[in-house]
Length: 409
Image (cartoon, rainbow, N blue to C red; front, side, top):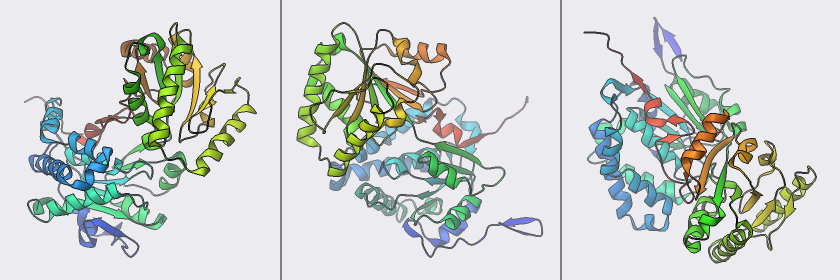
């Protein structure tokens, strides 16, 4: 930032290394001057509704469950319903420019983050991963078509870019933002935080997390095991367990645990063999993870029959156990006598608890009553990948606004 006669003038951002997927150099260098919009501005809501329609019409979208879920999430009726849940939206406006660092392991996340920022009334600058995800291309194609026709009036609010890891570019983009949203591992967050943000700007970070599944064996045996397997597959294998919401620990309750476990994993095995393509390196990494774990104790015992599904039975739960996690179908298991048995793994790194046959109110009571530092979501098994406007303890739209307080009239 430069100061001239008391006025703050943003520097020209070096765009030589930047690849624009949406927007251009002119928009990026002038986005600092766009007006903040009211929360749930009608033009933004219309844009998202039309983006939903275009994505659903695109034949390429049908091959991606995440795109179809996103399109359904931002349909007109869905956004209108969210709007009605905010009693004070008329006194909230956007903060200005939101700068998003999207993760490299969840392709559609950039669009989810963007949606909250737009509905809050902000402009967006998003750095997407340099991984070649077709989902990113499909969404950006639809956005460009809309912004070049019916939505030219808001075109100056959008920049979606790719650039190699470059601290200087990140510093420049950070210097003009009013909100910085970082999705990534702990190391990514530490690196990006070296780039300062303006004194009035706020930051939202989404760091490394882990998640847990709780299953009542008696209830499970009364369900359709194939449908349960499909839901758990979506929670886990669809993202290679790379999503923070993907369960890595399965905790069993009830009187018929052995029978339920055998049936559950036999159905999962059949589904994984049919649908999942595991790379050789994943096989090696999963066995290495188990070997590292056995040297630390925890009574770990390998109980799986093949490496498509690695299952490690634990005699005890510890707050350190998730340090030995692995993706691609690597699960810890534990037989619990009481729901309080899970408290050791509910540290501040624990994000989501998914349940099958367990009362979510009882889990909520445990979380609040025991004073644990973790757990931001409690959802049904099969729904951990659901798109929501509340994430990691943030009410996303609300957190990206400022509220205008009006005193007594």
